[in-house]
Length: 134
Image 1: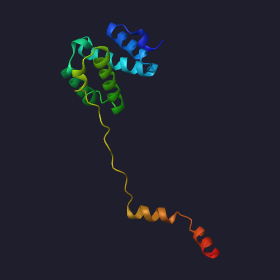
Image 2: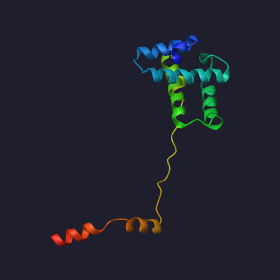
Image 3: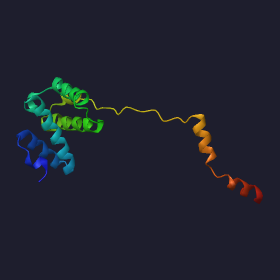
Image 4: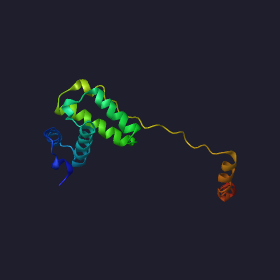
């Protein structure tokens, strides 16, 4: 039995049914319902009683306190967007729920000594062979 099939709250059950109607995968349903349930437990209230300010606070908590990965953060955003736009039909909240962006890291640049060692490792015998054939 998957976690969404053990849903206790009526809103989470309704959300899972809405996702089933849209032919979403079981793993997606599990993930979205998990994050919505976690959101509700964080505030100790039902999601329909919470608004944009609580969503913002939950997102800050996920980043600053829980140190969630960006993929977890975005799964929570997707789950909350689905809940408020489809299940609860509240588009005003969906527009204000931002996705997280994974920070970009700069590529590693080799130093001159490292480049020289890399070039030294290359077999140059193929150059000699190609010159003899010309």
